[in-house]
Image 1 (tube, rainbow, N blue to C red):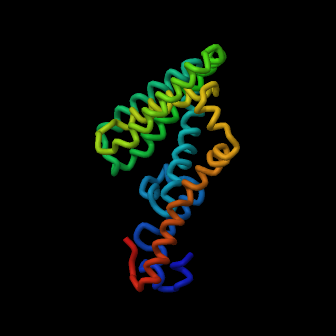
Image 2: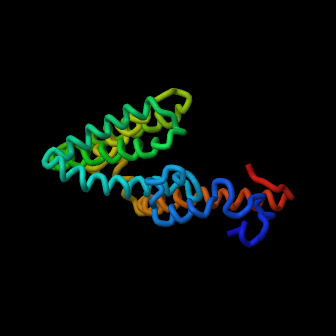
Image 3: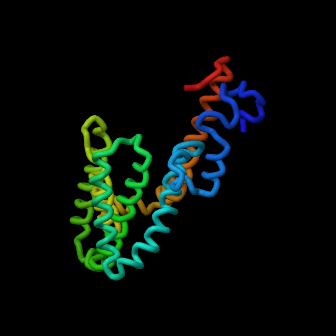
Length: 220
């Protein structure tokens, strides 16, 4: 919008609908079809790739689960593990990396759901002290994994750890899960994805404003 208002890109140093801001990619993203057009996946609102991949996965799952029948969750788990292993051999620049990431998380989520249906009721028998300890261990493991970016860790390890976190916190019996159910943190959780979706746009506008104020033509 700033580019269009300025007429010649004087406020941002960029021409409207040029480079990675093609009008065709904008139309593709507007209907969340960039998962079918990999060249449009990381343009405009980059963060929307996750929703587009989810739309694609729901379509594939609708057909895949019908074919797999009662083995649907085993097939989902196998596909997730295969995608996770494949991720270790491809770079982030590969056009289908996002698809593999989505399939890994989606498949593990489906398998975790089935596991919870089978053992979730039994989790209420776990002592609260043991539940609190398990939550603390999982939380510390996540912090350690995220805080050590220099250590090469396969993306599959992140997905497996977060699947374990979902199962651990689902019972809601530990001290951390009780804290996460506070009104303030529930609000943060409710708006977190919305913040993720727009944070790139806010950053771009802020940096463009700083560049314009400083008399710069471009913002890297």
